[in-house]
Image 1 (cartoon, rainbow, N blue to C red):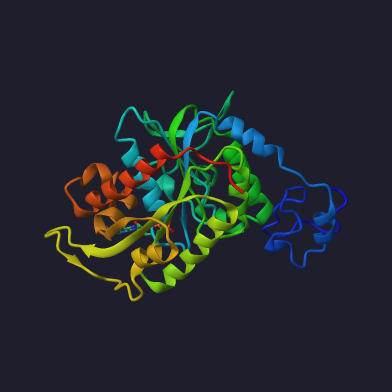
Image 2 (cartoon, rainbow, N blue to C red):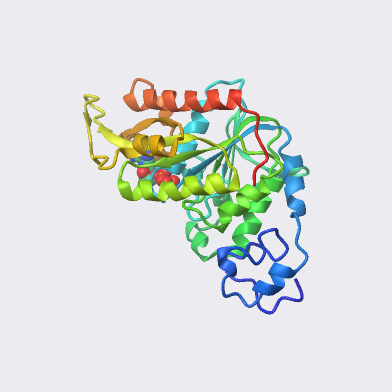
Length: 319
Ligand code: ADP
């Protein structure tokens, strides 16, 4: 906007968005009062995104309070698992700007986005699994850290608006860790398109659980339904004998205790299995390769709960 007193700061929600002047990034910004009192309204992108995603039945957000708890691994395995049914069309959208790791995990590292007449064409893992990642735009993984707020939000908007998914049964959205203004943007951009729900990923330690409480709070505040909580890396499963040992003892009841306390569904616990990490690093599908493992059985339990929720739920507009 030409009448701004200073350049838009990092994490700027956008001077004409509903959140203008109100986001945490606005505190202390010389533009704050201009933005807070200026003409704002629903971003026209919200309607454009809803139009773009009309053929997408279920949008599932995958959230985590912290980085490193296995959110991208879960998003990838959820998508790979859902696509095992060849009649199910699946999309995986990676907007984890902080570290887009999905391309590597699904074996698409080094792929680039192609422009078609109807938008950005996703890259396909298989006939019924389409992937789009911010990582496809980066010549260098380190580019992520120098992106500023407005550019990040603009990118997220473009990814939601311009990707030509066609008809999908599920769109799994891998989001950045934590709760930032970017999360607010994602939820606002998807307001008219409707979010089926969020799956929250955590590890059992109390320090991780504390961050999940903030995530739960965020979902409640912005009206995103919570499909439930998944405890990842909960116990170590020996790939040789399938014996279990607890690596991170849940000192406060773990994710199941937190889910009970917060009255949200507990979807299950996925063990720490080195083959999950190795498969992700190699771009191979754990859920296709290790179907006789306890971790696969855990995925079946968790994902069945997610698909059951989706079947029973009509997506609702949020915020
Ligand atoms: P996030 O997306 O939350 O930052 P990642 O999905 O990148 O986390 O996972 C972090 C690391 O943990 C990766 O190296 C991944 O392979 C590994 N990992 C995730 N889940 C498991 C698991 N259940 N068992 C073993 N390793 C895992």
